[in-house]
Image 1 (tube, rainbow, N blue to C red):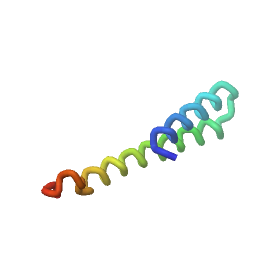
Image 2: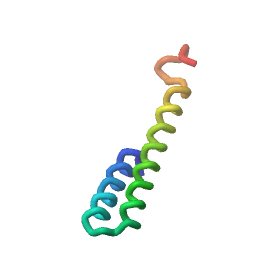
Image 3: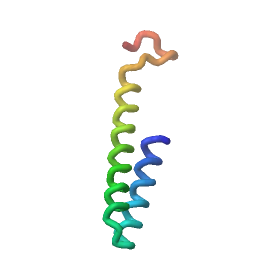
Length: 59
């Protein structure tokens, strides 16, 4: 699952937890959002350090 989809899934779980009063579901949603943000940051780092095939001079 992509970072963005993890974030959206987490937002949904957090909202459902708030509405139903389920603190466990709310925390699970917050954790999913954090996981999504980490995935997104890792992808940005990977993209920044991976040379692009269309630009062989890029390091």
